[in-house]
Length: 325
Picture 1 (cartoon, rainbow, N blue to C red):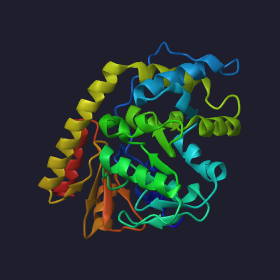
Picture 2 (picture 1 turned 180 degrees about the vertical axis):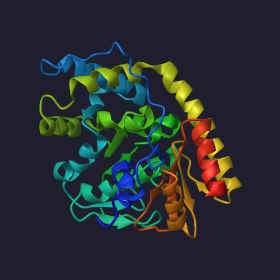
Picture 3 (picture 1 turned 90 degrees about the horizontal axis):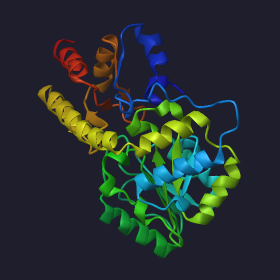
Picture 4 (picture 1 turned 120 degrees about the vertical axis):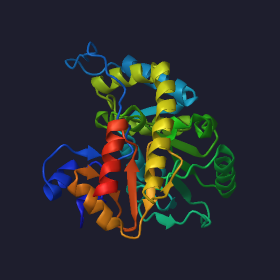
């Protein structure tokens, strides 16, 4: 790993090592900086093993949020682990769309990277993100359904990583997951709910795939704290609706600020924006010296990704640094 800051977002330890301690503003991830408020009185009992009934309640709450049957949902300790189990679980050939998540290329041995327009070879499984990362491209349901029909006709799986889909539920293909369909969808808890340290995700798949995941994960895949918090958060319809609306407004404010500084924001996810800049490395360093961390990319040195700031104060801080250096 040549530069840890280009490997993944949220690496404040590496940022402090390079730029020093200080009041850091981390805009390097697509994690909601205003997380779901965990009630102070919510204390999980960590003495006994997690209750299987609590896991069932979590999966039922998540399934209702996703618009699928609980029988098609398997909770995992982070969607990344679910993705990394794909290869051993499904076998066969696979390819993944690029640019995209680093984990997608590691999910299957010898997975073939494909540009967005490249055809999928034979009956290979196709793994892609929607919305995409880091570009934030959002494919609508019609486009994804066409991909599913094409893969089905070829005898291959379509695997869609919807880690950032909570903000755009109408675009989700999750409701099409079901018996007899070669469709697997991944969902992440931590990004939209802003609690990435909880390590909670979900596999939405036909029952036989769900059964294989359960066999691999064992009897207690999710700890008691994640069970309790995840269940309450997915049931909090008021917070979910309010957050969708406020994220959209905050993303619009970020777009306005970036354009005011000659930067063109790209992306449809209200959790982050991608910017292309001919001297992105210098801009990254300038922001870093002001203790604002954004996300650079090793394979795309002209790109920077900006997470959406939490409030007007954070937005103003970014504005001042872009304006005055």
